[in-house]
Image (tube, rainbow, N blue to C red; front, top):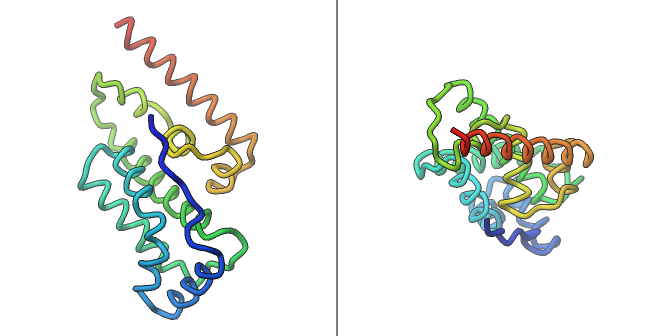
Length: 169
């Protein structure tokens, strides 16, 4: 899988100014601020859903939530960590709903991914698809780095077992 370029966005001074303007109600400032993240967020959503419609809905929902929550952003962490927490939570909620629907499993290579828990899938996607470090993933998900590592190892092992089972069938 190819990694996406994942930057910290605008310079911190420009970012702080845009955040303050967006908090004052400027949708344009928010749009400019989030342009640094929209491609990777949409790519992650497309990768998770395999559906343009669902990916677009996840993308929209994540950024609307971020806009609504912006007054609560307190500059304790970088903006990109804060926004990716919202994106990760939105995507995990989608995956949880998707799992609860008990959709029929296909024999495609991605069907093994469907066997993972939402948290395992999110850690795996953030690590392998976006190329994030475990420290960043842990921060985004609000867990410790050892917990993120354990979840990643468990996800990889489950994938290997699932794919081995599929191959022997």
